[in-house]
Image (cartoon, rainbow, N blue to C red; front, side):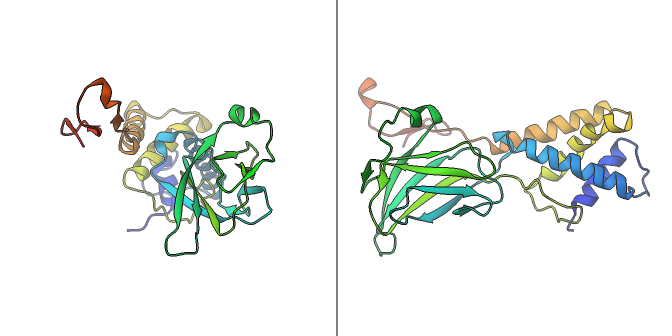
Length: 243
């Protein structure tokens, strides 16, 4: 059964006794709780453990352009500018049957500042940098591209939508609904001069922690085989093997 954020808010207010079992929140209570919920989802976007997936976006490289943008209404049009870029690829011969993907390194602000000649050009850009501007950031490629028929492909966290409304249907993965309801109850308590019960607080912590554990990715360990004298590969902890 589809549930809206109004339903989740109603459940959160019931958890702290603001409304009874058969009652519905007033318009003021619903709107006030919605604002708190939006703030909470926005805060969760800064917690990498609450992000459940990543998304990739491509951008056609147009010459002689040197700066692109990312964010709402930008060259890479996303509702919320990502906090960071996870990976970047320059796809050459993008319109052909045999494109070539060249991995790029993502630079920090300090690393970008060390590049003296930012106007240098090349057919093989090796680095990408995203500025810290908000809500729309600039994207710089270095050396700036001088090749046609190319695409920039960026991968970054798919943020939770903090601009939900009361009637937006909740479509997040399992466990998020409970985590939102119980954590929202804890958050709303002080606004009504009360505090969520210890049971509610513990469930709020537990439900959020479960999501963090599910979303956590453990990198596979690669190492220099010259140190051990064994065949090359990646150690897989699940089977204690080198693959």
